[in-house]
Image (cartoon, rainbow over all chains, first blue to last red; front, side, top):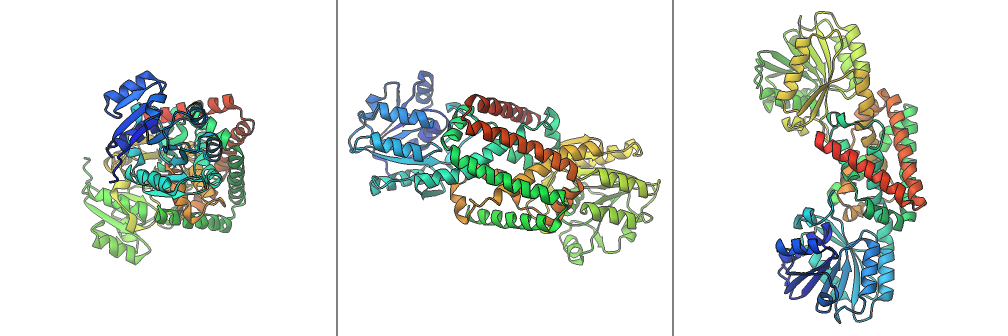
Length: 286
Length: 286
């Protein structure tokens, strides 16, 4: 376990922020503070012992924090950092947790003072329910954690975020350019969420369908219980990548539809074998 | 547990047949026999104690079996029953396990003698790998089991299949018309498999994608490791229903794509809330 002789502040005590605080608490930092606009979330997090102390007024903990984890929706994260850009401690490392990276990294890097280091981060963890009540340190267990550094970032600070990610339970930590992150994530995260929603909304669904499903339907629709505020923002902010990936997915559906219509068994088998061998490689890389 | 004072034969010792035999063994039938064209599968099933005895020559066990579970691919199941229609014991109950029902029920009902009762069945259980090596009695645990009776079937025989389904571990057993089964299953089973394959085959996938996925991608593509022989047959035999369902799914994708392109947050939220409330109902019905 790493030694976290630091003061850490988590901004936003929702599902991810609350879970992050829970996981950090196990690492025994000097102080672990929380910031939220919702006084009830602060009181709950204090009562549960997730944080040492919570604040509605961000400037107090920010001025003494070595590490700040901003766990807000993308636009709100940028707004928060912009508003408090002069409140951070000299030398502080700031990171975030949002699922879109190019816009945040670009905007925040341009506006923060040179004496703090902002490093974009994306822990690929979530739940079908939002808020502190569903937070758990276990959501990071075996998850992937993506860091999107820039040339401005200090090597040792990138290393620090990597170490934290591993110590809260993540299995893989990868560094990648923010723009590339957004293109990959459109495919690996946005499209599966769009699929789940579109499948759930078919007319064939009724309340008795629970008796006619197997694992394939259950799995494909698990994330249809989507957070509308968060995901509409994520979809819009990564719009161009998502549209491009969606169109390729639609093309693949059209090819399969044609093969089924034509009862073209050899094309179908080629398509299935291709998908199967790719999925097998994924298993072996997980 | 029900008392199975019967001789039972399982035809086809693959993933489902092998699993079925394992689960039946726990119910201690008088005799549990297996039929397979692959002598190695028979020897393995005997050695593992899954069956009491296995046969390549079907006529011997069929003539003494009160219950016959035909666990072959759809076309092969029809062929098997046609070939052995005069080998069954008087009063025997025959069922199958395939994922398509109207064609099998219609064809088999027309060809079998009146002194045996064929009842279509579909245990919604499976694995990403095929064959006896992956069989397990646990695949039926909490699964759904669909029975598609006709007017010709004896009530007590339908009841018997229901009881067996429950006693091998299935959670829900439902009776439904075979034609309706095929329409529902096109939506709840075929489409999720088509989605998994189409998503897996997008160009964005490469072998490093394992580091950039969360639960949504993992779940949506789990069944992309598809059995090409079985599923090409299932897709073709249920072609009209599948094409219709696929087109509705494509329409839903197009609506979402338009909302994202137009940054239409209110439409997106309406779509998400609709999907979320449907998924929540599914959870509560599972």
